[in-house]
Image (cartoon, rainbow, N blue to C red):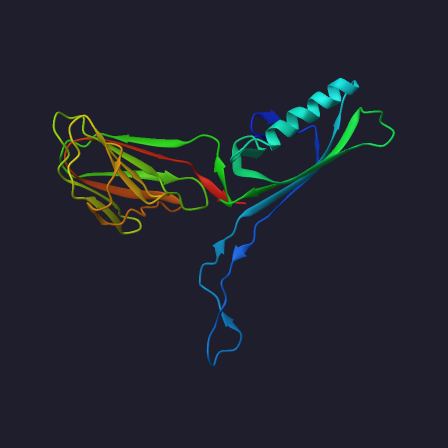
Length: 248
């Protein structure tokens, strides 16, 4: 791990002179009769993270300075969300909320000051490399473990593939650590797959969304540390994918 400030694919470590984040919480205070003050929920939810930075670009010529400024502006103005790194192995996902620059007086076009603000609706920082786990149950109960190395809960994507010569006609996945269970009552045809995505609370059978056949919860998460998982159902392969994350 190194400090490597990067926006998208552009390394801007040499440009940034000041950097900081602001991570408030959505407290949602409630007035309660005959109570001093207000009531707050036990676990306040994190609001969006705001990242602010200031810096300067120096060029060896007017055209070099302009090219560096244009490269930074191109990354800033890309549509949609993109990765922003402060450490080389972790990133936020954000989009521009404010951007300005000005020539440095007396520098004859060789230097520009800039200020940039990014809004990250998802307040967590994510590991640059994803984790995955592969299992191949033969139709009997299978217990295995998943390790969340971050400090925030993660919501892994799970793909159940019917590639053992028959359809999946029974499927249940339980996180023994949290006590939550996902059960699918439909049939996954041979050669196709069922995708469970707890982050978006969606289930797709061969690409078609199907929540009507879900029993239990699709909100299947893995808290920090080792999680014990049990699969009960037809023979298949199970691919679980996630990224560790930190509230920072």
